[in-house]
Length: 255
Image (cartoon, one colour):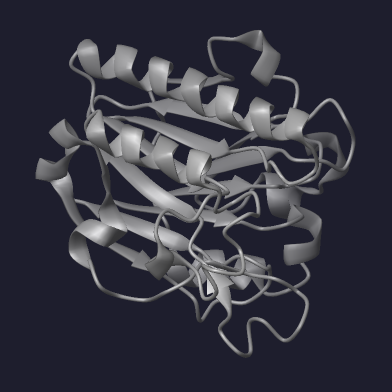
């Protein structure tokens, strides 16, 4: 089974940039999107009814902002939205798919750059998610998290760590949360397979950042440790254009 995650920075925008041909060629079993910036009723059937897929959208109350979506070939046991604290559920940031083999969180984590208030919101969101994930693991569930986490973990994960050390997305307090997340039993799958590989998933639209590969790795597939037995590989598909992020993927062996 192949899972893909992509912050598309506007689903309607990426649809004008080879999105559907990419889906048809790549054939993800599950495709998780973040920052869709759209409500389902604003889309035509080419995007709500992609051949071979069912879809589910979780949109922000505010129009043109945030939002997540999933496209899936295999029907899950259930789909739900949001975290356990309703404070985090008005921006369309979370879709949870439950399968017999695993529970998948598709999350667009908040950005903390706007203000101290938003940074605190981001950190509180992180902690709420971790509590929810831990509760599932304690029940014996295998948990997979994919999405735009909006934080680069280590210096290897961004081009210019020193000049960004005081910027949200690479603040010590944000990086420490990822340390805590890993210490509580979750695996950064890309780093598991490629501990020393320098590869990014987001580039600013400014300063020819993508052309110069001055990027950040802020999109992840994390899994609970009890899931690693079915994880075969992880990848970053930085050749795929259409957004300021590129897709990432996780390959599972469910045989």
